[in-house]
Amino acid sequence: MSTDKTEGSSESLNFLEEIIEADLREGKVTSVLTRFPPEPNGYLHIGHAKSIALNFGLAQKFGGKTNLRYDDTNPTKEEQEYVDSILADIRWLGFEPAKVLYASDYFDQMYDWAKELISRGLAYVDFSTAEEIAALKGTPTEPGKDSPYRNTSPEENLALIERMKVGEFPDGHCVLRAKVDMASPNMHLRDPIMYRIKHDHHHRTGDKWCIYPMYDWAHGQSDSIEGITHSICTLEFAPHRPLYEWFIEQLDIFPSRQFEFARFNLNYTIMSKRKLLQLVQEKHVRGWDDPRMPTISGLRRRGYTPEAIRDFARRIGVAKRENLIEISLLEFCIREDLNKVSLRRFAVLRPLKVVVTNYPEGQEEWLETENNPEAPETGTRKVAFCRELYIEQDDFMENPPPKYFRLSPGGMVRLKSAFIIRCDEVIKDAQGNLVEIHCSYVPESRSGQDTSGLKVKGVVHWLSARHAHPAEVRLYDRLFQLEDPGAEDDFKNSINPNSLEIIENAMVEPALVEANDGDRFQFTRLGYFCADPDGTAEKPVFNRTVTLKETWVKK
Ligand code: ATP
Ligand code: MG
Image 1: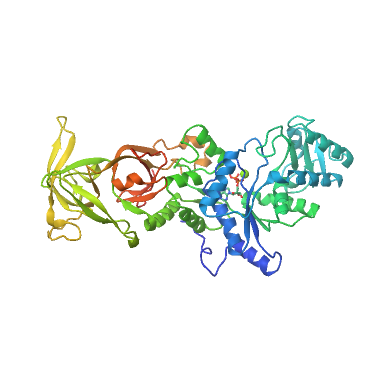
Image 2: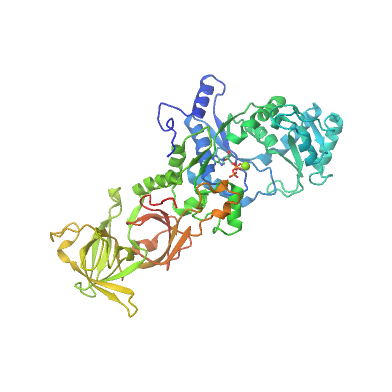
């Protein structure tokens, strides 16, 4: 498990906290304002959760604030559905943005600033094709060459950007480039593109614009407009930083500063929105919120708690180098939390009928069992015991190996919170299939008041057949078979064909029928489960969030 030793302890700070602490101490900034800047082109995933927890956490630590700013500069891929889901997910994680803002709100200001740069000879319209621009760009070891349009006069360029803006040119006909340095060793400074033409409807600005700013032109300017003090992004933007600073210096606007940390990957899954979208569109999963998805909405539907996700984000720390985090760390975090908070319930996934032959037909009694031994204040509930019961098929073996402590012919087992039973007879059909087992119970062995003197090693969960309610249970496995599926040519080649197992005829105790969507439980001995919105009163549906212990082994 990879954890950052510096985080979580009160005396030492991570490197971003150190920077902010020093900035405040030295008076470089007087208050802290961070932002979370997602592009609304998909649902948020666990990688974004890290960025959210980091940005909001840093601000909280130093008494500052955090904006949510949608980086909505690419009309083709962005949708209102994504905008809505992003805010809902941030709130569910437990954070409230100081302001909800959009880069598209600043399109007018960006355009004015672009004209300012043009009039000072710092930007020009280039009619070269994309190939020509690329060819003149040079290589990291070889300087680039000037475009033939590089020395057009500011007056001409001002007229041209206006013509671009009003829609005189088709898509891709020309671009606006900043005039920085074609010989810079940093390729991002070789006259980067500021605007491109895209005749496309924008989810907020409609058809007002047909030129859209590039990331480098929009991002720092938006930060500056909002007065962001610490603009935290992932490592791949480090080479963009000189350009981020160049634009801000040339315009002499609020000096936002950029800092980078390493993005993390999670094994056995992918975290690119583009690839996640493919899984959804090609129906490899049931939707963005499929419980197998690494999206926040998928994790929520799976039964994850915001607390567990925040704990995970804290444990992985703030790294300076990209790393692959084990999904078992995420599972560890959810077990830790659910063990403390989830109510215990009985469910039998694959029922085997048990007839208690010495218990009178028609009689029943209600036995007390704990709701959560980790939280005694949750009290107890009563479960019905009667003549016909269900136990798990797995908890019975006709020919058991040595040291098998569950039920077998002639053997005894304790029914949790109830009695000891002995298996007297195995009933089979004409084909030799197991139909049911006949047992006798020991009346003096009642849990808590056991005077039987019997010692049994196995304890199994069970249900009263008459009171049990049918339910569907969904068990999940890793979505991918490879540890790093994103590294493959086609990540879809390693999709795990058995990532979902549906058990249609499980049985649950009556208390579970009233479960509301999202309610979380521990099914005794089976794992942590959560009620799924697909469920109905007749047939509730439960997702297994995680098993009780780490059981997964590399294949
Ligand atoms: P993706 O490639 O999955 O689409 P992205 O970086 O393009 O991710 P954005 O919407 O642009 O997605 O990201 C919003 C913020 O979340 C950015 O600051 C980005 O750096 C951060 N972020 C995205 N993925 C991760 C990750 N795996 N680890 C840490 N931060 C991440
Ligand atoms: Mg992005």
